[in-house]
Length: 125
View (spheres, rainbow, N blue to C red):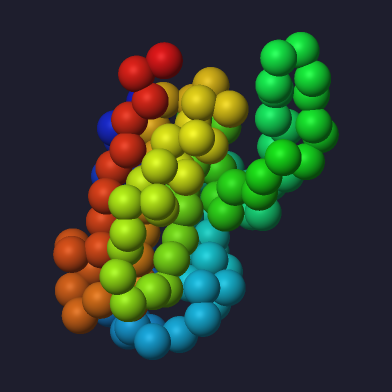
């Protein structure tokens, strides 16, 4: 399975969660529900993964926490906010660079239709 196939499954599962519970809940609820949906599809899901940061020869063991990592290939960052600002996209891109992964998905569940809350972010390595 490649990143695009995983991405399609993540977005489909997120739409299912959003249809069922709707907007307005805490991010932690969406994270649990999405994790459940993805595992039911047979995907490996890691939650709240502490990942290291490398800086000029230094390595910090717990530099950031990825909300979800799917199949060790795609980072999923979840939000439940009024507006997605450019800093969220920049944050996800930083996570991708630090982890050397190529694809991230930013999901904002605080929207009427989830299709309006999905953004794919690509690290061109």
